[in-house]
Length: 306
Length: 247
Image 1 (cartoon, helix red, strand yellow):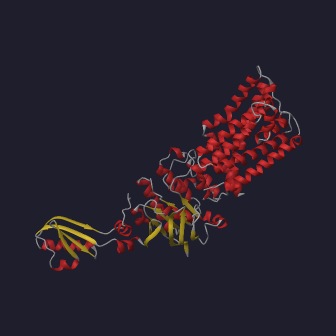
Image 2 (cartoon, chains in turn purple, orange; image 1 turned 90 degrees about the vertical axis):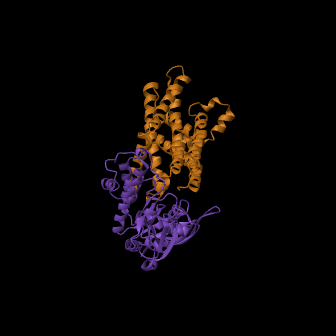
C-alpha cells in the first residue's frame, strides 16, 4: 500500500505558481526525496502534504487521509512526524522541557534520555534553545519529530546548516528508520544526501517534476557516458582498444567515451599501453554521478552541493 | 485526561519560558505596578492616605487585566506567529484552543500574583481594605479578563508582525489606562467627557471592579456594565475567531 499519493498538485500564490501539477506516490517503507534548487517548489509540496499549506487544486492522501480536511488532518497528526526547515522553537525552552511538552502533545511517556542520545545531545537536557548552535537545534527538531514513533516522517532540508557530525547522525537515523519500515519524505538540495538516502528521487524544477526514478537509474539514464583520459608517449587506441568506445584526441591527450564499465575500460587501456611500451604521463577516469544527471535533466547546476 | 495534561504542561512551560526566565518581564509585571501604586498614592494625597490608595489598588489591578489581554495574549500570539512557533505547534495533535487556553491560564496565574502583591502593599502600607464579597470580586475579574483577552486576540489576529502588534497594544493600553478611571478619577473631567469615557469597556470593567472590591457593593448594582462587558466579549471572540490565522 502507498503511504502517500499526490495527484496533479497545484499551489498558486497570487499569480505565481509555486507548484505546477506535481504527481507522485511513495510506497510504505521507502525513502522518497524531492531534489531541487531553493525555490523549486519542494517545501511548498511538503507543506501541502502536512496540512500547513492549502492546495489550489489536485489531491493528496497521506496514509489514506486528506491533510486539507480538518477532521482527517486531526487523525493524521499523531501518525506523522515533521522537521521543519527554519527552526521554530522558543528561545528560552530547554531541550528536556520540549521533549516533555511534545510527549504531552502526543500523549506518550517522555523518552528524554533515549531521544537525547539518539540525536547526539547527551548532557544537554538543560540547554536552552538560544544557547544552541543551528545544527544542534536541527537535531533537537529531529528528536521532537521522532519521539512519538510516527509512521511517516517529513524532513524539510533536514541537514541544512548542520556540520558533518550532525549530518552523520541524521543519515544514520534515517537509515535506521528505513530498516524499521518507516516511510520518509525529505526535501534536499544536497545531491550527496539524496543519492545516499533515497530509494527514489523526484527532481523538481520551477514547480514541476522533471525526472523521477531511483538514483542509480537516473545516473544510467541521464548521467551520460563514462570517460577515460590518457596522456602517453607512443600510445595509440588501436586494435582491441577501438571497440571500447569512441576515441578523440585533443592537445595530445586521448579521451575515451565508453558506454561500458569505466573501471574495466581503464584496466584494458593500461594493459594495452604497457604492451605498446607507451610512457604514461597522466591517467584519469570519470564515472557519471547523480550530479551529472541533475545537470543534464535541469540544464542547471544545483549551486552549493554537499 | 490527555487534553488536561497538554493544558497543564503547556501552561507550566509558558510560565517558565516567558516569565521565570525573563527578568525584564518580571520587572514590568511585578515591580512596575507597585511603583505606580506608591508614586500615585503620594502624588494624589499628601502622604499615605487610604482614600487615594483605595482608588488606585483596584485601578492598577484593572490596568494589569487590560495589558494581560493586549500584551500578554494579543502581542504574544503575533510574536508566536512571526517566530513560526504557531506553525510548529499546529503540526502536533494539541488542539489550538487548548494552546490558547494555556496562554490565558498562564496570564491569569500571573494576574493573581500581581493582584496579591498590590493588595498586600495596599493593606500594609496604605491601609486599603478589600471589603467586597470574594466570589463577586472573582466573577468580575474573570469577566474582565475574558473581555480583554478576546479584544487582545483581535490584535494578535490582525497584526502581521510583532512590531505592529506592539504598536497597536501601546496605542491602546497606555492612553486607556489614563482615561478609564484606572489611575485618574474621570469625575475630574467635564461631565460630557466622563460620560463618553464610560462607554469604554476598560472604564466599565474598572468601575465595576472597584465598586465591588473596595466599595463593597453588590454585582447587581453594576448589571448594565456587566451586560456591556459580556457584549464586548462576545463581539471580540467572534471577530478574533473569524480573523485569527494559526499558520
